[in-house]
Image (cartoon, rainbow, N blue to C red; front, side):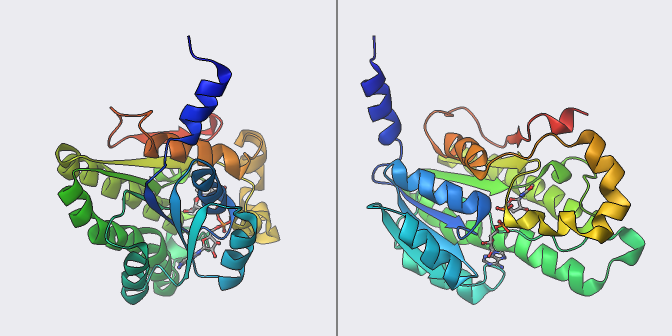
Length: 258
Ligand code: NAD
């Protein structure tokens, strides 16, 4: 029978020797995931558009091996620089960076908002996977987690553009899982509900409250802590989920059951 200490040792060892890229690691879910991975032995390549947030992450990271890379994941050149910084072997990728800057219904969408949200939420995920998959296939090992949303399986409460972008993340995830599962790469999505992060700020705007307030107040469970999402993400990255590929893990406190 295993003791508590054995179990703690097993947990600690889950990512020892693994290099994992986490985008949007300066805040919220990405930050909590980077810290969790570090605490479980991973070498973490943390990417964020904000150098200040990365500096704060580095201050909190303790003795683990953290490489911070400031850049915009919606730009191909910055994706190239990020993958170069990670080195030749990338075992895991958490495509987490995302924005939610529009609550607009379809007839009010501007091209500028649509293109920006898709570049950050979708194109960046495709480009990062495109960059790391050849190495993962050569190694016969890769673990990818793409961050979607409850708005990726239904309309959600965040506007048409965001919902469409998160539906695209799920299609990207399933198709990648289908092609690369037989080559040793598992690719899954985590769909958060409401989480206490900086992305919530627009949710709380008077404009959004006016349009969505009644819906939100009646259906959204209490917001989760970012660490609760990190636990879901790390489970999918780990060998505790060996038969899970192409899945969408609803980590939303049950919100999407309504
Ligand atoms: P957050 O705003 O707290 O953190 C996102 C981080 O991504 C920030 O540090 C930001 O600087 C960084 N970032 C933004 N654009 C970037 C870019 N172009 N390049 C590099 N870094 C960039 O948000 P969060 O809530 O932790 O969001 C993480 C993911 O979770 C997103 O994909 C989001 O859509 C998803 N999500 C969040 C919620 C929620 O309620 N918080 C719900 C569903 C899905």
